Length: 257
Image 1 (tube, rainbow, N blue to C red):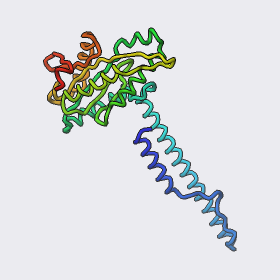
Image 2 (cartoon, one colour):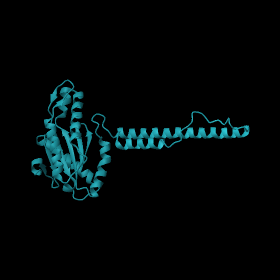
Image 3 (tube, rainbow, N blue to C red):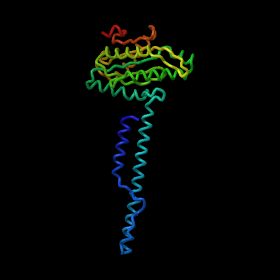
């Protein structure tokens, strides 16, 4: 459950406490001697009881429906295997991050990670093993992300990260931390088999690549990071490459000082 959903549920609980408590049955007025007055009071109390009972049921139904909607919205943006946010969540978050960058965040980095030669894992060990590798990679990625980095599963063996960074060098430093962590990790399958894997990374930086924020910024960053990723895979894999505005690509060691 997300913090927003939990907060809303707590709010419902607080408001529900303000509803009047219903008696188990309508109140009677046996102490009233006048039968006509007794009947009038009884009828009014019974009517109020029924109204309140209906209001409480309606309230409970609305709270339950709202919680169900929140839950469905939450799971619709989560990848069930890795528990990272999915492509849909990314497509919602990326424009918001770009707008924030336009309002003064120092810079915005966009990174694409691809597990090298992932198909051979599925072909050799089966799809269950492939899922185990993906899950462990996602856990590594989540563990390395701070509040300024948002990880998502893009699809298949590709993952993306939106990073609030000072400059391209900071984005590349993060990419290298992930790459080295993957290279050194022992991916362990359910039968105890240990695999060694690597990842290639394409990196772009909004203000380094596209000085002004435009309506095409998201598309440009994604396209150029993708080009850098496939250049890294064609060049030998297990490396981070950044796309430059002039169409060239730079390795981590050329950027990190």
